[in-house]
Amino acid sequence: MGMTIAEKILARASGRARVQPGEIVEPAVDLAMSHENAALVINQFNEIHQGTDLSPKVWNPDRIALIFDHRVPAESFKTANNQKKIRQFLAAQGIRKFHEIRGDEGGICHQILPENGYVRPGYLVVGTDSHTTSHGALGAFAMGIGATEMASIWALGVVLNLEVPATIRVHMHGRLPHRVYAKDLILHLIGRVTANGATFKVLEFHGSTIERMALSGRLTLCNMSVEAGATAGIVPADQETLRYLKQEAGVKERLAPLDADGDAVYDQTVDIDVAGLEPQIACPHAVDNVKPVSEVAGKRLDQIVIGSCTNGRFDDLEIAARILRGKKVAPGVRLLVFPASGRIYRRAMDEGVIQALARSGAVIMNSGCGCCLGVHQGALADGDVALATTNRNFKGRMGNPNAEVYLCSPATAAMSAISGRITDPRKGGS
Figure (cartoon, rainbow, N blue to C red):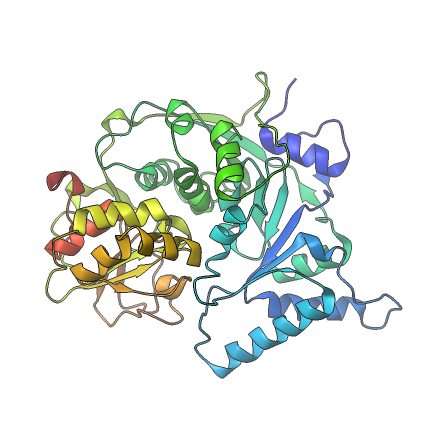
C-alpha cells in the first residue's frame, strides 16, 4: 500500500519507512518561521531554559526564518519594542534568514519564503501563522502552530506528538473560463466542503487544471486550504515547481519532483470540473458562505483591497492593472493595493503596473499584511462594506465588527472598483 505526499514527508522526517494516518510521530523540522509573534515565542523559549543547565541556544539558526510583516512599519511603541527584541534575539542566536521592510526589500512571510528559495519539495515547514499552509504549493508539508509549540521546536528541532493526518484528494480538471482564477477555485472548494470539512486533514491537489497552473495560483490554493480546516494543503512538486525555484528563487542545487504513490489511500476524493465555474464571492461573515458573483452583483462597496499573502503576487496586480488601466475608481470608493513583497513591488514599478493602478485612483501601500488582519492601515468604519482579495471575512476581521467583508479574486476586485459595486469581471474589458 502506497503513501500520500504528506505521509511520505512525515515518514522521511521521522526516520521511518512509512507512516499511516492516526500514528503519532515526532518529525524533524526543515524550516521554522515566525513573524512579529516571535516575541511571544522568545518568551516561551526562555522559560524552557529557566532553572536548567541548558544553554538558551536554538537548535539550528540556519533553519529558522523571521519576517516582520503584520505591523510594518510599526504602528505603536509596543510593536516597535517587540520588533527590537526580536532583532536582538536573532543577532545573538546567529539567525540570518531575517527580513523586514527596507526600501524595496521585505514583504509578507508567505511570499518571502518561496521567493528566497527557503522552502523545497519534501520539506516539513512550520510557522506561527495559520496560513503557513501556503508553502505546500512547493510540494512541502507546511502547517501553522502556536508559540509554545514553536518554542519547543526552536529548542529541539522536532514537532512533538504529531498525529499523521488523513488526506483528501482534490481532483480539478478542465480549463479555467475567462477571468476565473485560482482564488475562485479555492472559494468554490471551501463552499463545497465547508469550513470544517477538512479539519485535521490534508488537501492534496491534482488534475489537469493544477498541472497547467502557475506556482502563484498554487500558492493561493494552499494558502486558503486552512479555511476548510485543513492542517496542510499540498500540490505535487513538478516541472513548474522546479522552474520557479530555479528561475525565480535562484535555487541552484538539484531538486526532485515529489508525488503520491499510485496506490495511496485517501480519506475521500473531491472532483471538480472547472469548465463551467463562474467567479466566486465569499459573503459575510464566513469563508464558506460562498456564492457565484451573479447572485451578489450590485452590492454597494466602500473599500476594496487587492493584495495579501493570498493574492498580492505580480500576476494578481497585473490582472487588476489590465482591467483598471485608463479607467477610474468609482467616486466614494477607496482602493488599497498591497504588493506581497518588495521584489514584487519593484517589478510592478518596472513594468508599469503600479503606475496604472495609481493613476486609476488606487492607493499603493507598502508590502505587508496591512488591513487584512485589522490592526492598522485601512480600518473600516461602522456600516462599511469591503471587497477584498484576502483570505478571511470573519466579523471584525478587518478591524470593525460592525462592517462587512466579502472575498473575491483580483479581477473581480478591480472590475468592482470601477463600478463601486460587486461586479462580474467577465462583463467588461478584454
